[in-house]
Image (cartoon, rainbow, N blue to C red; front, side, top):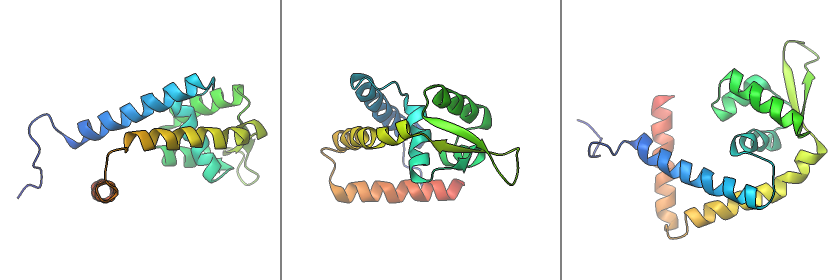
Length: 146
């Protein structure tokens, strides 16, 4: 028996995609208003590096769900902005480790505050118990498909 109780056109991906896009647009607007020369895509790479600096480009692909060409382009642009630097792995010169610069480390607090502010706006009238249910359901959906 199907668990799908959505009407035609109300696919999960459409609903979650719409919400995700709205949050990303709002955060990008906040970055622009704060005169940050940073895209949401670049920020998502920095976010993972703030969690674990010095990971490989492949690990960034896995963490951000992006392909190698996309990560290469993002890292290239972050290097041009002096926010990251590539360092060849000591064990395998074919692997680049990506490290944050001091300039990127200084951006962490300000961008995370803007991200938190954006999420608070997005969830303003949502009861905490519904947020938890939503997180649980989306994790189950993800686990079912990975």
